[in-house]
Length: 432
Ligand SMILES: Nc1nc2c(c(=O)[nH]1)N[C@H]1C(S)=C(S)[C@@H](COP(=O)(O)O)O[C@H]1N2
Ligand SMILES: [Mo]
Image (cartoon, rainbow, N blue to C red; front, side, top):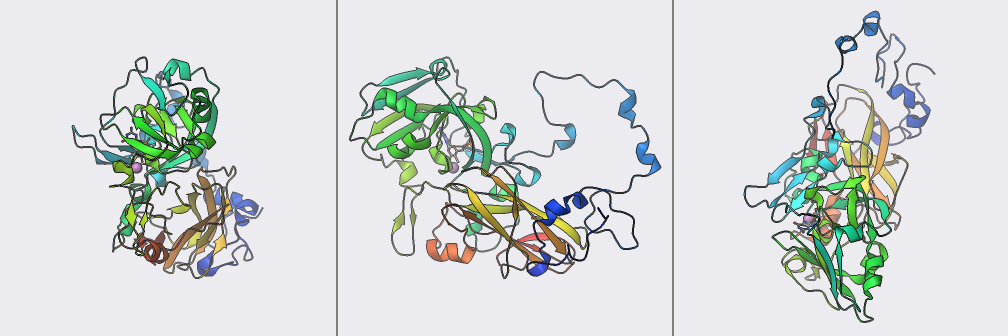
């Protein structure tokens, strides 16, 4: 392998210098290994040729290492990778924390960085005292302790959870300048393990005429939502484990509802009650909230599914490119309707697009990573990403979303995000 990109590698396949995604496979090593010293500036090299001093022993080679602990924490050098907290003024505990999306890779959000949305703080629940009740239109009203639940067959699934209010700063007239995480970070992805809810509902024996279930949490806010029985029977999970360990208190310990692909609020934390009924209860979360008047005069209600969306996390707001070079544009996409089948990237404000490489595995209702090689010439550029899911749904441009949804929008903002790279390499958020 030669130490630099050949001219044919650098032949753009779309405007603004987008390169063939196969370059990442064919010449992938060039993004990682030393480029041979040439008269020409090395392009796209991630490493430098090793020098004599690079073989010298570092200080830690000659000392016994530190003590280890019973529960690990990230390296102190990574201590800046934290959730950004909004609200949370004591003692209310009403607010959110954003996942620092731009600092993460892969498809799993570490549990300690999973975003949070609390309406009345994090309850301190003793798992021995907690009860989950299924009642209403069932043959037998049932009570489950956590110990009972842990004996049922379980299912594990990698799933994103996204707050219906995520990215809502996108509705602002002017583009807000914030990091990807502090703008769009009310979405995270975990491996959730628990009991398929259909098993418990079957055991209770749901009445023929039942069609809705009211799910209620055990926080002081008694958050509740109405959910169609069909979805809960289809793929909902009574979640007990998150990324292999029991749920974090902030994410619903000891038990929460997991409703794959549906807006965050339906994933009721600290789950205590499932009331089987034949109509929605029309409480706050389906009337005052999560209902939006469209320009047509019709109101959107029960907009459960989170539509396809994608974000470029690098380059993104707050980052600076260090001069013309070959870069890897990277980010991730997800859809509440199923698998992501395509992510396209544009480097010329949407005039032309090229398909990005998707990292395996691509799973339903889960984060999917994408990557795209880009030869940045140093000219101003506008980067965009556009996701398509297996239903054929394509992530809309912002003006299309606003035309359809009007200016009363607050929830479900999933428009294409545009990042402007100026000639100094600085990256800002723009509407383009
Ligand atoms: N009991 C209860 N469940 C809840 C909430 C809450 O405040 N109380 N917040 C909901 C909202 S609006 C969202 S977006 C998700 C957030 O889940 P997370 O905090 O684990 O990320 O939980 C949902 N479930
Ligand atoms: Mo939410």
